[in-house]
Length: 370
Image (cartoon, rainbow, N blue to C red; front, side, top):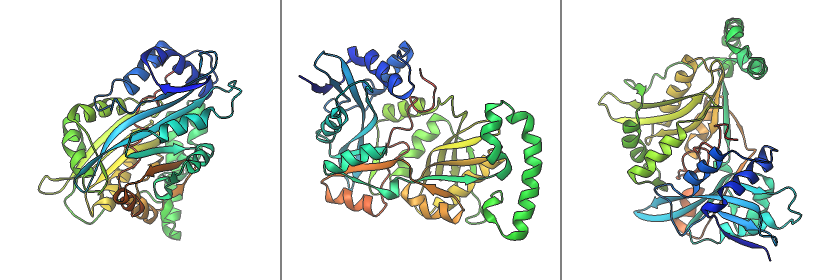
């Protein structure tokens, strides 16, 4: 008889093998990947022991399905709630059972958590989610992309495959200058490199240490009605995991302060040399989203990024559109709760979901684990 049960430490290598078979078309995962899954799914400081990742075991006792689950404490109106965040749903292509994924999703959805989230679900997962009473959140499902250097951006992928980004950068940069001069004459602002914001004045940016971010992030996310809360060890571990993304390039972390030294924003992104800047999260105090976003665009441009993008927070959607970012929604954020206050916060865009409240911060996304 098939069974869905919590992940155990002895399952880590079979689950790692299942993940690489499903997503990388390889039969065997490395011991490093299995070890990392243990750190990620069993050993995080803020892990709730009552909310678990799940495995699907077939009649022969073999694991043929898996869903990873992170736990996150969330706060709203002074109340603390438990959120479960699903990730890495995998079903063995040879399982021969079309219900494996549905059973795993049902087990995840019916857990003891107050809030259930999966921030990067494909069309199949969204359909199963809706069938169990959940819903998708369009305003938290948008990925954004802002071109900074049109010629360099358009040719970046092929130049990267040929390992010619550095060699060809002066040529594409010169062509980008021609395009920008033309764009200014024709009023095509989406092709123009961002300039420093003029209002409010006096903002400064600086590289951020772990200590800087440990102080800044909790205060900045608290500006939203529904927001995450961590222990110091929990947030430190998240920062440590998110700092290593070898496929995405160097990790850039900065805080933004006003004249008095008060931190009013922060961001974390990854930058390939002469390539794409992949944003993990943009944090902004109330009323400061536009200024923080402008400074992020300028910072990435000055470091040589040809384009920049990431998952948009709801509060950033309109500022992003004002800055000529393109918005797409290939992967949906899906959500479930019976808490009316939580639903209201999410529906009005007054919640932090995605980025650091999701799955993208983990090394399993972007660190070339095999």
